[in-house]
Length: 67
Length: 256
Image 1: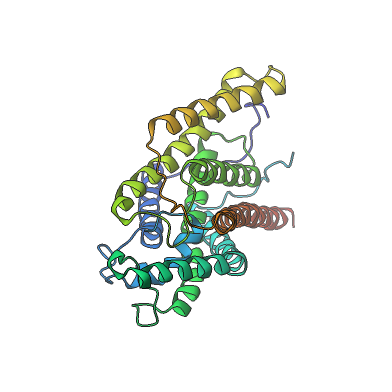
Image 2: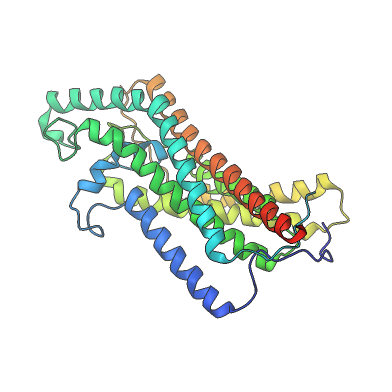
């Protein structure tokens, strides 16, 4: 593929600042979600160890250090 | 090489929704794989853990009895919740990375960049950590080192992704006029350089009890790796398919 090919950008280049904030917020929310599944011990979710224990098997089989 | 359509490019949110959907479905597929292939090994490991706890209650550790916070059946069901949520998060992050990548390098086709990123994530965030810190079944692992193991594991996930990035830098640095084997060799070199340094610098942990069955450990680790392979293969293929469908719909609308 040569860099002179004029193909469409995936997303409108308009409003780059707003896009930046949307992207940052999205990454933050999704990282929090992944954290809740993979590492939370109740400190963030305020659910005690309930979520941690509920997702115990998933954590082991996704390969995250568990205990 | 499929060319990008001439239609209006989708907004970030529509791409993100496709990533989330692809991740959710791939997560459920990975959960099904883990349930069928992995759960028997988890059960076997828990049986060993409980036998050890009953023999010596002072060692403590996780509770897996029926009076625990979440029953074993709950944990087996929670497996699907965990893989679906984790898959959706990874699918969303992949879609975001895809958008950012295509904004910088507008020559990349949507489908290809999604597939390449999923492959890169599988290599960098799963296979690189797997080799140094292979996943452990219940009954393996010292609770005293869990914080240290978690931090080093996360660090290796990041370094694995950096290694993949370094490989792509090597590929591009050699230049387009170079023969393909040389570009590939530069990619492998860039990847191995970062991976090798990461493996040397990060500490190792050897916490498998001497009497833990080797076949069970091997089977569990393969099942765990398989779960991640199903997840990332599913995310890549589903995301590429959804992006292709979007292109087809937009092109048809413009042509019609």
